[in-house]
Each structure stands twice: as C-alpha cells, then as structure tokens.
Image 1 (cartoon, rainbow, N blue to C red):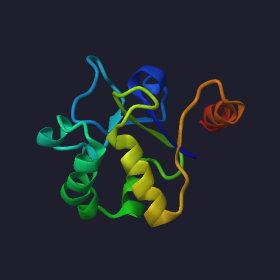
Image 2: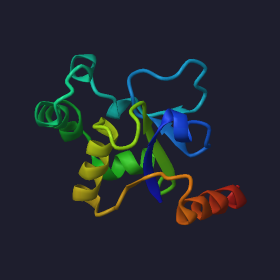
Image 3: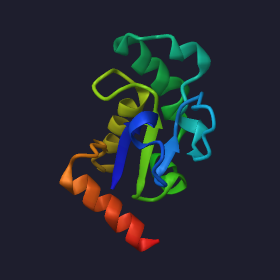
Length: 126
C-alpha cells in the first residue's frame, strides 16, 4: 500500500519517505527530493495557483512508475509537513500517481485497523 502523511504522524515509521524540500531536524529517514516543490512554489498557498505550476515544474518531468519503484514499490508513506486535511503537495502527488497508474493512495490514519494491519505485515516481512 502507498500512503501520504506528515512527519509528526508517520515520520518514525521505516516506510516513511520525505518528499519535501526541508526535513525535520535529526531526520534520518529516506528522502525523495525529485517530488519536493521548488522553493518559489512553497510560499504559494492557493491550490489553483500551486497545482498547475507544480505539475509543470516537477510532476510533468517524472515517470510515475519510476517514482513508485524508487520510493519503495508499493510499500511506502510519502511525507511532508502539513497536517491532514490541509492543502499540501503530497495529496497532489497522490492524485497524479492515481491518474497515471491507477493506484489509490490514502492518507495514513494510525487508528485505522486496515492501516495498522498493513504496518504489522510490513514489520513481519522484515
């Protein structure tokens, strides 16, 4: 399964992959800088302005299947800073991946039984 989340909720999980330009102090997890918005886009908070620019400057230059392979196949959580429910680029990436691959990417919810079962299966697979 592929999820999105933020550093506070899922940053300590081994499946976490930072897709933001900045990372929390002391971050030791994996990073995938190719999905990080350029510095000039980070300040744009209006989705109708941000999304087309982010697509043109970042997503349109990437191969969605290669992105999935490089981040962990079908077992990773894409992280940035914004809380669930707030506009952020991780949900734009999720929609882009869905459009181009058909893969549904949900927001990780630690209290969801299905999500915790996935985590347990990942832990036992190691």
